[in-house]
Amino acid sequence: NAGVTQTPKFQVLKTGQSMTLQCAQDMNHEYMSWYRQDPGMGLRLIHYSVGAGITDQGEVPNGYNVSRSTTEDFPLRLLSAAPSQTSVYFCASSYSGTVYTEAFFGQGTRLTVV
Amino acid sequence: LAKTTQPISMDSYEGQEVNITCSHNNIATNDYITWYQQFPSQGPRFIIQGYKTKVTNEVASLFIPADRKSSTLSLPRVSLSDTAVYYCLVGEGEAAGNKLTFGGGTRVLVKP
Image 1 (cartoon, chains in turn yellow, cyan):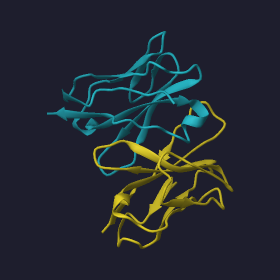
Image 2 (tube, each protein chain N blue to C red):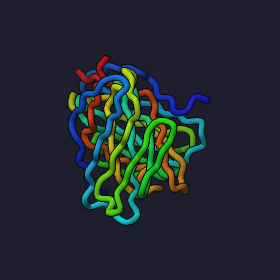
Image 3 (cartoon, helix red, strand yellow):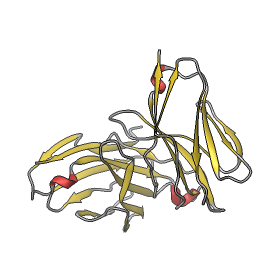
Image 4 (cartoon, rainbow over the protein chains, first blue to last red):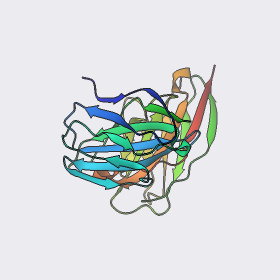
């Protein structure tokens, strides 16, 4: 059981380039989310989805797009990379419709924008 | 979402019990209290969740007083591998799993 898989693990981009961070889960979770974590800080929510075809913005959505065409996949797109987007990105998934909501996180993608 | 306050860092020694207290004065009636652990270069990992009184699992215990304005995560007999950042989160159970709000966390260093 792979859980939540993120690719790539590391990426260097030039300012202005675009790219897609991939996230896939094999637990049939309805909920999926993207977070970024800057050095020495907690995670901040970028975008989230409560099911296929449904997405919404989190705390820091500017510069990022998401889509949810399947239950399993939730890619995060950087439209035009900026140095301020240098961060570690985590994808998470969780069940819906249950009181105890344990979120499962991927191993992260470390992104550097130069 | 309720704001949480927890110590920035704590030091301990192997075999000791570590207690981390989190304040959440404006916790709402529907809010649950959840703790996550994060090792360097890894994503956070769920430790424990509770609503009131005491919850215990194989990893930790969570103590919640009657007014629910604070909570204490207790890690029994810590080892070096318990060195990590611990986050206290407060939010509605179902919604909280999808839209987690992380503060700065408590950096726990376990010394030999």
